[in-house]
Length: 254
Image (cartoon, rainbow, N blue to C red; front, side, top):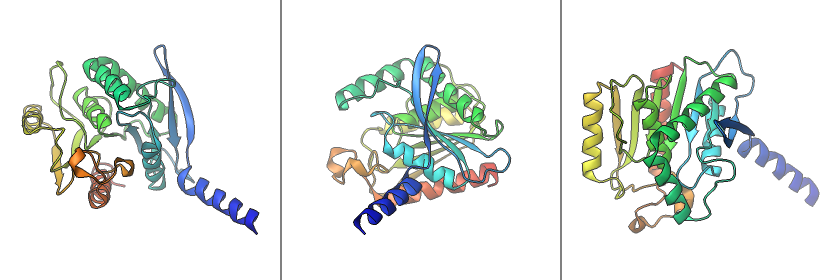
């Protein structure tokens, strides 16, 4: 009976939390390892979604998001922006890695473009692609819009709103920013500069604030101590997911 229970739990866990598989791919000489999740009983070419990770690299959080998106009918790739053997061991490593890519945005953009190519290669409709990202990955999602990659929509979830030195031209992808109203890591000046950037680029953009939410509000491992500046907020996490679903329905008609 105990063995049966273990087997049942294993089957349940794998079906609910491990729908996808690892995907190795490259960008130039960089070896990357993402996580690809596909919907069951795929008909035609579904919408493809690239999920960009936060500064700690590809974790269970992004993989779970990919699985949830697949259950909604999307092909989702939780992408690897750092490299297969470059996962940070601590926040100091994470800060250095994220800082490197934010200071070298052309390299970061190339990693994002490689992920877009991979989700299309996996069977997604090349005319219906979205990029979403958490924290550092939210900055990456906005970079996909600034670069006018062949995507219809981008979603930044508690992401940094700062930009690199590259000039922003007219932005074609639709932009959704889901933001903690009390996020101390994104100062008011950065928010204002971002909004002015979107206006100047004639972007179709929207920004939603969540009360009582700070940075990393969708990440359960962030804890609940808001005084640290990063904390999980269950209400904001659920609302942001629903807002993203509504946004995708508007853009893709799904």
